[in-house]
Amino acid sequence: MPILRSTFIALSRNATLRSFSERSAMGRKMSSRFVAGMTLDEVLGSAESLQRSGIASTLDSLGENVSTPEEARHSADIYHRLLDAIQTRSLNANISVKLTQMGMDLDPGLAEEIVAGLVQHAVAANTFVRVDMEGSAYTQATIDMVRRLHAIPANRGHVGIVIQAYLYRSDNDIRALTGDGIRIRLCKGAYQEPANLAFPEKKDVDANYVKLTRQLLLSGVYHGIATHDEQMIAATKAFVRERNIDPKTFEFQMLYGVRRDLQKSLVHDGFNMRVYVPFGTEWYPYFMRRLAERPANALFIAKNLLHQ
Image (cartoon, rainbow, N blue to C red; front, top):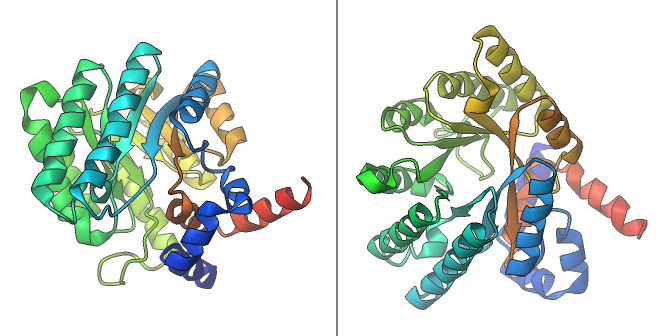
């Protein structure tokens, strides 16, 4: 499995294969399991369908590492349109953005200006902006930006962040962020990181995930526990029972197209559930990282293609 994970991560960076896949009908067919279409109407339709099932959503316009300020502003414009639609359609939804898509590599000041505008719009629309976490090269800058934006009184509760359990530093980062009252999505992490920065063994990542989950649940802030791992979910539920924690004070989060049965089961059991719903033409890196996280997904997709 570690070899397959490394292979899929390497493929996620292959520009030639990405270009071919994103233009091909077969590539779009393969990606449809995890990507809710190419257009705003398609992703909004998916969010409405989830809401009818009692599931909230986080909407993500796919794309990373823009090369011009104009591309960054165009990416932001898509999110502004999503925020308008969330408000007009009364969706239980928010948005999730990547800083590299907002121009971080070009000019950190530009990225902060763009994200600040999105947060301001989210405040007006009574919703929320989640700033995604990318590779470890961006971790500190992402945390610093989110803390600055959240420190603006009008923004409190309307901007949050993602923390990755495989990084050694995450314990301290969570203490600082929850001290500020910042909402966190806790995930395991989907990037290839060196052993001096991240736990190399799954069992250690899992143990840290459980520890950090408990830390979040006791913080008094509304957080997202993002996992498809039934052991992590069972550990969370056991801790909630043990400490008599109200299940409505946090939410489980999962990815679009992954463990739909488990999503419905958790809603049935009285837990809040939010699904991360990506869309757009630049789906290839995201798709490959989903296969890297769980290579068995590749077999599942292959079987479905053969049966269609």
